[in-house]
Length: 143
Image 1 (cartoon, helix red, strand yellow):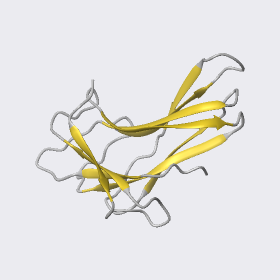
Image 2 (cartoon, one colour; image 1 turned 90 degrees about the vertical axis):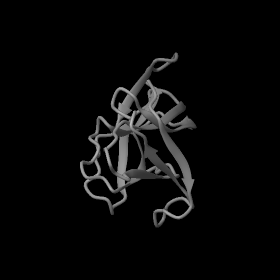
Image 3 (cartoon, helix red, strand yellow; image 1 turned 135 degrees about the vertical axis):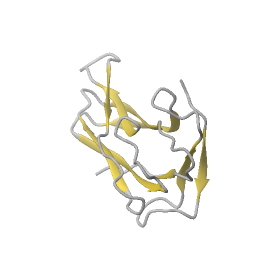
Image 4 (tube, one colour; image 1 turned 180 degrees about the horizontal axis):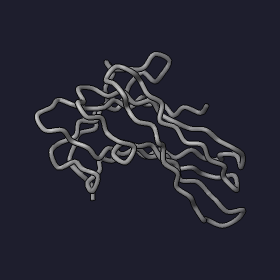
């Protein structure tokens, strides 16, 4: 189930060394773990069959109680068999700890064959009477 919220291109809140824009995510009252906001879905093609590290940076704003790893995460879905289309999904475990630090949400994985990897991020938390939001650096980090 998808929840309500806005994902907006933001060229003001950007990470030093990151992309020239970020994705600002503003959750609305129906946002919860059982109703997620899909932030993005990106696909990287021809990822080698060797150990990989990928991630994104996320910045919180106005949170009183920060989202848990089950409420805000980055994930990768990759080919997990030597042939065929079997896939494995891995999720980040990072959490925001303040409203001023860009935090890296990353995953480590090893595809079993060269091929595409799908990356997604989700938010499933809302705080009443708050102007909370997150910004996601609009760049996939490959280290």
